[in-house]
Image (cartoon, rainbow, N blue to C red; front, side, top):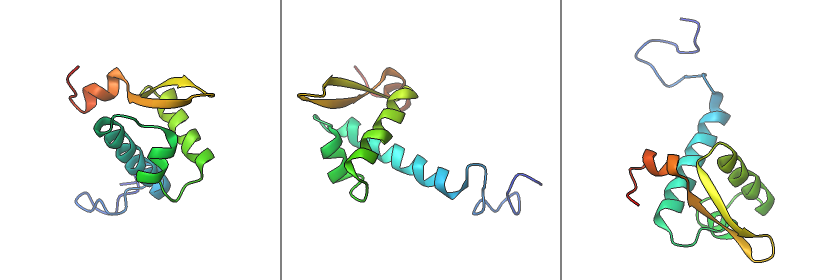
Length: 98
C-alpha cells in the first residue's frame, strides 16, 4: 500500500495531507460556505462566526492564503476594512449563479 492507508476500504488513517491538513481543509470549506451565505464577510465576522478559536491575525493570514490560491477575493482598504467574496473559481465549485 505505502500511501498511508491501512486497507483500501479503511479511510480513517489517510495520511496524504495529515491531520493538520484535513482540519485546515475543513476550516477552509467552512469559511467559503460562510462567505457564500453572508452579505458582509470581514475578518472579524468570519472569526466570530467560523473561527472563534483563532487570533485576528491568524484569521487574516488564513484569508490571505485563500486569496493567494484564488478562492476568495478581497475588496476594500486597511483603513475602512476588507470584505471577502468568493472568487470565480469558488463560485464554480459551489455552483453559485452570478
